[in-house]
Length: 207
Image (cartoon, rainbow, N blue to C red; front, side, top):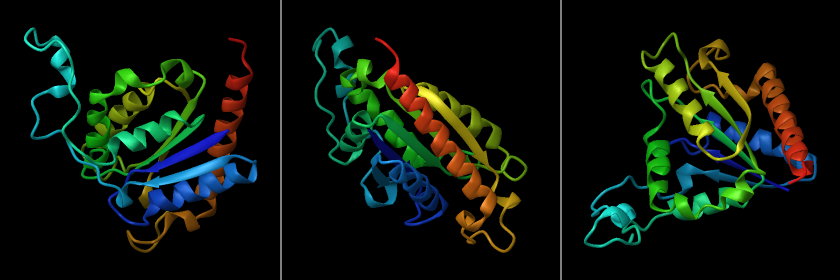
Protein backbone atom coordinates (compact mmCIF):
# COMPACT_ATOMS: atom_id res chain seq x y z
CA UNK A 1 0.00 0.00 0.00
CA UNK A 2 1.25 3.48 -0.89
CA UNK A 3 0.51 6.89 0.63
CA UNK A 4 1.16 10.04 -1.39
CA UNK A 5 1.00 13.53 0.09
CA UNK A 6 0.62 16.77 -1.87
CA UNK A 7 2.05 19.86 -0.18
CA UNK A 8 0.09 22.55 -2.02
CA UNK A 9 2.14 25.59 -1.08
CA UNK A 10 4.22 28.24 -2.78
CA UNK A 11 6.76 27.99 0.04
CA UNK A 12 9.67 25.58 -0.24
CA UNK A 13 9.39 24.08 3.23
CA UNK A 14 6.49 25.75 4.98
CA UNK A 15 3.84 24.32 7.27
CA UNK A 16 2.24 22.19 4.56
CA UNK A 17 5.58 20.54 3.82
CA UNK A 18 6.20 19.92 7.52
CA UNK A 19 2.72 18.47 8.00
CA UNK A 20 3.06 16.21 4.97
CA UNK A 21 6.43 14.89 6.07
CA UNK A 22 5.19 14.22 9.61
CA UNK A 23 2.07 12.42 8.37
CA UNK A 24 4.01 10.27 5.91
CA UNK A 25 6.47 9.34 8.66
CA UNK A 26 3.54 7.90 10.60
CA UNK A 27 2.50 5.92 7.53
CA UNK A 28 6.06 4.73 6.91
CA UNK A 29 6.27 3.46 10.47
CA UNK A 30 3.24 1.30 9.63
CA UNK A 31 5.09 -0.25 6.69
CA UNK A 32 3.65 1.84 3.86
CA UNK A 33 5.51 3.10 0.83
CA UNK A 34 5.31 6.90 0.80
CA UNK A 35 5.95 9.84 -1.51
CA UNK A 36 5.85 13.56 -0.76
CA UNK A 37 5.10 15.79 -3.75
CA UNK A 38 5.98 19.37 -2.92
CA UNK A 39 4.31 21.75 -5.37
CA UNK A 40 7.21 24.16 -4.88
CA UNK A 41 9.46 21.72 -6.75
CA UNK A 42 7.17 21.32 -9.76
CA UNK A 43 5.98 23.31 -12.73
CA UNK A 44 2.22 23.81 -12.48
CA UNK A 45 0.67 26.05 -15.11
CA UNK A 46 -2.94 27.27 -15.39
CA UNK A 47 -5.10 26.73 -18.47
CA UNK A 48 -3.82 29.17 -21.09
CA UNK A 49 -2.94 29.70 -24.75
CA UNK A 50 -5.16 26.85 -25.93
CA UNK A 51 -8.12 26.13 -28.21
CA UNK A 52 -10.15 24.00 -25.77
CA UNK A 53 -8.28 20.91 -26.94
CA UNK A 54 -9.66 19.02 -23.93
CA UNK A 55 -13.32 19.41 -24.98
CA UNK A 56 -13.09 19.27 -28.75
CA UNK A 57 -15.22 16.12 -28.66
CA UNK A 58 -18.25 18.44 -28.41
CA UNK A 59 -17.11 20.50 -31.42
CA UNK A 60 -19.11 19.18 -34.43
CA UNK A 61 -16.20 20.10 -36.69
CA UNK A 62 -13.61 18.06 -34.79
CA UNK A 63 -15.48 15.55 -32.57
CA UNK A 64 -12.27 14.37 -30.95
CA UNK A 65 -10.19 15.79 -28.13
CA UNK A 66 -6.58 16.76 -28.72
CA UNK A 67 -3.67 16.69 -26.30
CA UNK A 68 -3.31 19.59 -23.87
CA UNK A 69 -0.74 22.00 -25.35
CA UNK A 70 0.77 22.80 -21.94
CA UNK A 71 3.88 20.84 -21.07
CA UNK A 72 4.45 20.82 -17.32
CA UNK A 73 4.21 18.44 -14.34
CA UNK A 74 0.45 18.42 -13.79
CA UNK A 75 -0.30 15.18 -15.64
CA UNK A 76 2.56 13.26 -14.02
CA UNK A 77 1.49 14.37 -10.53
CA UNK A 78 -2.10 13.29 -11.13
CA UNK A 79 -0.89 9.91 -12.37
CA UNK A 80 1.10 9.40 -9.17
CA UNK A 81 -2.02 10.10 -7.11
CA UNK A 82 -3.92 7.51 -9.18
CA UNK A 83 -1.31 4.91 -8.24
CA UNK A 84 -1.71 5.47 -4.48
CA UNK A 85 -4.23 3.83 -2.18
CA UNK A 86 -3.95 6.81 0.18
CA UNK A 87 -3.83 10.47 -0.81
CA UNK A 88 -3.18 13.31 1.63
CA UNK A 89 -3.71 16.97 0.71
CA UNK A 90 -2.11 19.80 2.70
CA UNK A 91 -3.55 23.11 1.53
CA UNK A 92 -2.89 26.62 2.90
CA UNK A 93 -5.21 29.59 2.58
CA UNK A 94 -4.05 32.62 0.58
CA UNK A 95 -6.18 35.73 0.93
CA UNK A 96 -9.30 33.78 1.76
CA UNK A 97 -8.88 31.32 -1.10
CA UNK A 98 -7.06 28.06 -1.80
CA UNK A 99 -3.70 28.69 -3.51
CA UNK A 100 -3.67 29.43 -7.23
CA UNK A 101 -1.41 26.38 -7.50
CA UNK A 102 -4.28 24.15 -6.40
CA UNK A 103 -6.80 25.87 -8.68
CA UNK A 104 -4.50 25.38 -11.67
CA UNK A 105 -3.74 21.79 -10.73
CA UNK A 106 -7.41 20.94 -10.28
CA UNK A 107 -8.69 22.74 -13.37
CA UNK A 108 -6.05 21.26 -15.65
CA UNK A 109 -7.32 17.78 -14.86
CA UNK A 110 -10.23 18.43 -17.22
CA UNK A 111 -7.81 17.53 -20.03
CA UNK A 112 -7.47 13.92 -18.87
CA UNK A 113 -9.80 13.12 -15.94
CA UNK A 114 -11.76 10.72 -18.16
CA UNK A 115 -8.59 8.59 -18.31
CA UNK A 116 -8.39 8.16 -14.54
CA UNK A 117 -8.77 4.56 -13.29
CA UNK A 118 -12.16 5.15 -11.67
CA UNK A 119 -12.65 1.55 -10.52
CA UNK A 120 -9.26 1.57 -8.78
CA UNK A 121 -9.87 4.94 -7.15
CA UNK A 122 -13.07 3.69 -5.57
CA UNK A 123 -10.82 1.43 -3.47
CA UNK A 124 -8.63 4.39 -2.46
CA UNK A 125 -9.03 7.05 0.24
CA UNK A 126 -8.24 10.73 0.62
CA UNK A 127 -7.73 12.97 3.64
CA UNK A 128 -7.12 16.71 3.64
CA UNK A 129 -5.63 19.25 6.02
CA UNK A 130 -6.58 22.86 5.39
CA UNK A 131 -4.75 25.73 7.09
CA UNK A 132 -7.25 28.56 7.40
CA UNK A 133 -8.09 31.36 9.83
CA UNK A 134 -11.83 32.18 9.58
CA UNK A 135 -11.54 35.14 11.93
CA UNK A 136 -8.72 36.72 9.88
CA UNK A 137 -9.62 36.03 6.23
CA UNK A 138 -12.94 37.29 4.92
CA UNK A 139 -13.12 34.53 2.31
CA UNK A 140 -12.07 31.70 4.60
CA UNK A 141 -15.53 30.18 4.77
CA UNK A 142 -15.58 30.02 0.98
CA UNK A 143 -12.15 28.35 0.98
CA UNK A 144 -13.41 25.68 3.37
CA UNK A 145 -16.49 25.01 1.25
CA UNK A 146 -14.49 24.97 -1.96
CA UNK A 147 -11.89 22.49 -0.72
CA UNK A 148 -14.57 20.27 0.82
CA UNK A 149 -16.17 19.97 -2.62
CA UNK A 150 -12.79 19.41 -4.26
CA UNK A 151 -12.01 16.54 -1.89
CA UNK A 152 -15.41 14.95 -2.46
CA UNK A 153 -14.85 15.20 -6.21
CA UNK A 154 -11.68 13.10 -6.24
CA UNK A 155 -13.58 9.81 -6.67
CA UNK A 156 -12.05 8.39 -3.50
CA UNK A 157 -13.49 7.56 -0.09
CA UNK A 158 -13.04 10.63 2.13
CA UNK A 159 -11.31 9.46 5.31
CA UNK A 160 -10.67 12.79 7.04
CA UNK A 161 -10.87 16.57 6.71
CA UNK A 162 -8.85 18.51 9.28
CA UNK A 163 -8.94 22.30 9.67
CA UNK A 164 -6.06 23.99 11.48
CA UNK A 165 -6.30 27.65 12.50
CA UNK A 166 -2.65 28.87 12.54
CA UNK A 167 -3.10 31.82 14.97
CA UNK A 168 -4.42 29.37 17.55
CA UNK A 169 -0.95 27.80 17.71
CA UNK A 170 1.50 30.52 16.65
CA UNK A 171 2.76 32.32 19.72
CA UNK A 172 5.49 34.38 18.04
CA UNK A 173 5.39 35.13 14.31
CA UNK A 174 3.78 33.87 11.13
CA UNK A 175 7.01 32.05 10.38
CA UNK A 176 7.06 29.94 13.53
CA UNK A 177 6.88 26.28 12.40
CA UNK A 178 3.49 24.96 13.47
CA UNK A 179 4.69 21.36 13.47
CA UNK A 180 6.54 22.06 16.72
CA UNK A 181 3.22 22.29 18.57
CA UNK A 182 2.34 18.99 20.33
CA UNK A 183 -1.39 19.37 19.67
CA UNK A 184 -0.83 19.62 15.93
CA UNK A 185 1.39 16.55 16.01
CA UNK A 186 -1.35 14.73 17.91
CA UNK A 187 -4.00 15.71 15.37
CA UNK A 188 -1.85 14.74 12.39
CA UNK A 189 -0.93 11.43 13.97
CA UNK A 190 -4.61 10.67 14.59
CA UNK A 191 -5.51 11.66 11.02
CA UNK A 192 -2.80 9.42 9.58
CA UNK A 193 -3.85 6.42 11.68
CA UNK A 194 -7.55 6.88 10.93
CA UNK A 195 -6.85 7.28 7.22
CA UNK A 196 -4.79 4.12 7.20
CA UNK A 197 -7.53 2.20 9.01
CA UNK A 198 -10.08 3.45 6.49
CA UNK A 199 -7.84 2.35 3.60
CA UNK A 200 -7.35 -1.11 5.10
CA UNK A 201 -11.06 -1.49 5.68
CA UNK A 202 -11.86 -0.47 2.13
CA UNK A 203 -9.26 -2.86 0.73
CA UNK A 204 -10.80 -5.75 2.67
CA UNK A 205 -14.33 -5.12 1.39
CA UNK A 206 -15.65 -7.65 -1.06
CA UNK A 207 -16.16 -6.40 -4.62
